[in-house]
Length: 169
Length: 126
Length: 336
Image (cartoon, rainbow over all chains, first blue to last red; front, side, top):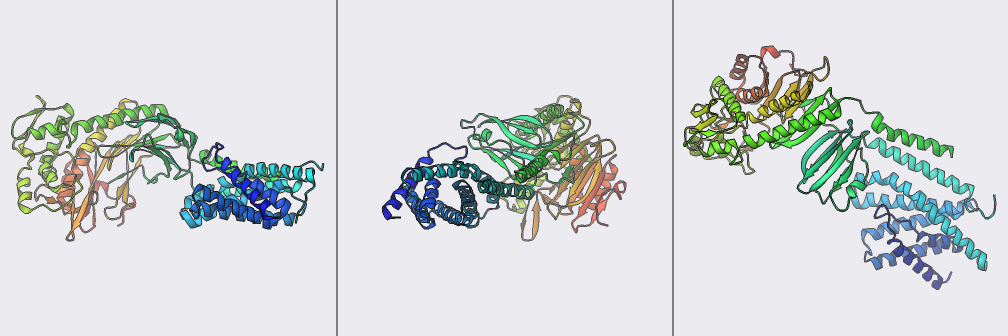
């Protein structure tokens, strides 16, 4: 994958991430994680290395725009994002064709939330109360993972169908 | 399986496993934090009421900052109505575990769930 | 999906426990902050709505009494009596007459160990305010001269109270909470409640038993070990109060200065660590516990024995426990 494509995909991820912040949610800090669609698509089409790069660029640029570079939110996003991406890449490889992006995305969303909470709890708050959020965040990962995974799978199928650009692995 | 189907059997398995993990998490947390016996209601940091959660009731707490109507039902408590503008306290729903808390900042009102102190005795003379 | 179903069932079971696993009871307990302290009312044997109505009325009664008996308001009965000291008699409410009449009676019985005219000393030592210091000897002497219950004239016919000397002050800190507990209990009774426990801080009044054959279980605060009890009592239709040197105190030069002052010396009474008194009414148990604390184990026990229906547990300055004969063996968990 060349740099231009990677940059433009990362840009799309940043934009989705920013737009998503405007969707009203029942809980203020809750997100659907739609930017993860880009990560999933890249993972599916270009492999783990590219997906990881897109994720890191998305987090760095996103934090830069929000003015939170190197703040707690940045490290939380970085930890959650990289853990989820690496986890998804490995799972996808291990499962072979057994999983669609839905299953991969579910695992990713789950990993993302758990790792973020672990980092928040162990590094930043050191407060036992964070622990009580664990099942909540686990539960939230299920619907969000489903939605993003399903959308990503649709996008990948459409891209493959239209120009046969299947550059996996 | 039809080729245009998106969700595979593997996806379902992942979903089930994660659901189980969530369930385990819920149980872990439930076990670690006991169900409360009492609700402690404070206005402006000063104790106003302590209510046993074992008795269902509706109580209106009034203060110069406004009113909050709390409801105890089935061992849980919630803010049913409030005079504040944002109604966040009412939107927080029911609480019933120790240290769970609902805060209404505009009314300087908070209610939290606590274990019952000195439960061995009906009272302490001091 | 069977596994998910099992997990879901387990989750629901755990959540449902919140309501189901609780001991079922018809005991209603509420606490409010009144008279500068924590007031807890426990009502048993009636439905929730009736209990609520009765408790609301009882809390309201205590709030009303607080307005009459407070030391801190110039417009309260007490404020007006103190402002007119050495000048003229002041017309007051029937409640104030009732409290002061009882106060005088206990002052007589205790030889002034309990004295409602302790006000000048209380103000001097300032246990009611944040800043604490030991006042100069001369000031203690001057204040002490103004403390004398015999110079307080209570006229029940005209409903007036007069303090003979300027500077005299009535302070009901040792009796008002007990009286409030009695009145709140009376209000609960009028609302059809026959089982209740009213606790105004540590002044506790029991109405009936908690349930048939089960008296109310009241712990006695350990005077040196916060959070633990010295022992416990089972009471029904009785009152219990405790006076201790651990509630409001400061320590300076190894001397413990606390809020229970001995009218005879003008200083913190030093004979006891705590005195717990059982009596037919809370106004009596409250005032008697103060008197017994000030008098110490020997004279204190003697005083309490002279009052019909009263019993006492006194912890002396060394920590030894003294009990009236009527209470021997009836304090649960008491060492020795």
